[in-house]
Length: 154
Ligand code: HEC
Image (cartoon, rainbow, N blue to C red; front, side, top):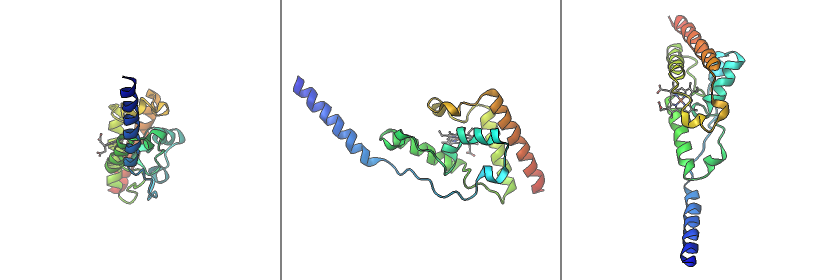
């Protein structure tokens, strides 16, 4: 019985070690144009965006240690790649005010309805938990910035 247990532990450890060769690439390509640099929000709003959104929606991801450990790394890298595909603050459409305004509106909605940042993220990232005041500051600024861009696009 003891021997079976020993073989089992070694087998599980071996599989875990082999899995580490499957870690996907954790990229941070160069920032093309940054949302904060381009729109210059007040410092508290910028801080909330960085704390709650930038890990998944920019090329300035702070990869946590568990992003280096399969199988968790598969999930973290996929989420980040999906987040960047959907909305990317490092490829901010500075020269396209209509698109930028649409993206700001979308962000405001996701924050208002508590869809972003995702609960699985705030469960781990305490500093990404936004208070009601932080949410309001964010959505007020997002809405005003979107309106400004829309009127400049006309
Ligand atoms: C854990 C990673 C993660 C974090 C943190 C995160 N998002 Fe997302 N976000 C995603 C993923 C993945 C998608 C694409 C799938 C979906 O819509 O759920 C997405 C989609 C979106 C979309 C929809 C884009 C579109 O047009 O399809 C918006 C808007 C958005 N996020 C805003 C935000 C904002 C604002 C924050 C910060 C308050 C934030 N997200 C934080 C992962 C994240």
